[in-house]
Amino acid sequence: MMANKAWQAALGQLQIETPRSSFDAWVKDAEFVAYEDGSFVIGVNNAYARDWLDDRLKSKVTRLLTSMMKRTVEVQFIVWQEEAPKEALLTKSEEVSEETTPPIAENRTLNPNYSFDNFVVGTSNRLAQAACLAVAERPGEAYNPLFLYGRVGLGKTHLMQAIGNRAHQDGYRVLFVSSEEFTNDLVQAIRGQGTQPFRDKYRQVDVLLIDDIQFILGKEATQEEFFHTFNTLHRQGKQIVMSCDRAPKSLSSLEDRLRSRFSWGLTADLQAPDRAMRLAILRSKAAGLGRKVSDEVLDAVAERMQSNVRELEGALTRTLAYADLRGNPLDANLVEEALADLIPDPRDLEPDKILKTVAESFGISLERMLARDRSRQVALPRQVAMYLLREDGRFSLPQIGRMLGGRDHTTVMYGCEKITGLMEDDERLRNQILDLREQLYGQPVPIYSR
Ligand code: ADP
Ligand code: MG
Image (tube, rainbow, N blue to C red):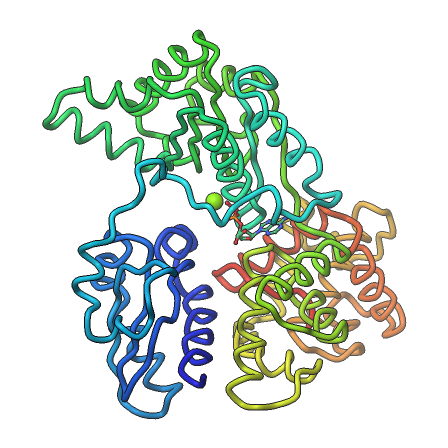
């Protein structure tokens, strides 16, 4: 039991530390299979995942588990399917991994864990979800192409996979790739095998799902080939779905002929979840894990993790594992503790740097921000500066008042409260503060409020 919990905690840690695309592709579905006398057996779906984990993460996982179990442990990754009898695995794992071949019907580019059923819908993603569902039900007919965009961790890959799974079930030929894989395949084709197998792969499908299309920016040969692939499929009424981290019009270095094609069908964006939706997602994840978690705890997690769903999930996993390992009661205090070290250390934040970064982000001069000017145009940036000096800089209200050109502490308090309120409703402001924090800390910061 203890070993399983240690693995869950390690998984939470890996989710936070591993690049997102790698985590989703290789780590996410890894499961605890067995533990005996210092040996962990971790099961994964296929040989690729096993090899990848062996190469890249074995030592890290070993280290994490060693520290959690407070003894040296070793870790073995095996290819494993749930039906296999668990007892036999410790001794026969090699055999099992060789025998496991996927059933013919399986589409190896799709992950069955992503479905429409387990996608929580709310105001921030309603349009995107509806468009995806329509496309999944009638590929090539509803919106073609469908272009999904939004920040990292908001469900783009999940929705694309859900389309793929649904269409695959209905008998359509589906191919899901990241745009990096598309590029790699093309490079292989050019170097060796010739372009025919490449074209067969990409042009003989009913639904082509290309994830993270922004990675073809600046790659001319890839853009050229994608242009032709796109035209061929589109002409035949085959469905194309793309995801991207920004809107087509912001893909400035993309060739015009591609950019315009991206907007031929429907463009739908995904926004950061509001509080109600964060709670709904946490409830659904907790239920999925078979755990009863109080509203107090879910609230505390939702309050702290406001930027995206991936981090929300990671925080919940981490909190649960933390409670299990320590045997502490699962309450709001524990959430504090469990998530404490996710916050970058704000000690190095100079107040000057905060002021300058805020002024720049709003496109006003520092002098104007500090001056007596009361126009709205400067009042908001000034309040954002107050908020960051308070929340991140941890300065006192009177200190902040002085930094901002001699303002009263009640004015500062009002400013901070105003921004705290706006953060809930104002999507744009929330994203702007996210960006500001990323600039200030030199890394994305998952947590808004302390
Ligand atoms: P993106 O591709 O936009 O970076 P992902 O699709 O990888 O984001 O989503 C990150 C994680 O959050 C995934 O585990 C996904 O299942 C989950 N997720 C995102 N949005 C939702 C949602 N609305 N309901 C349930 N889970 C979600
Ligand atoms: Mg993605």
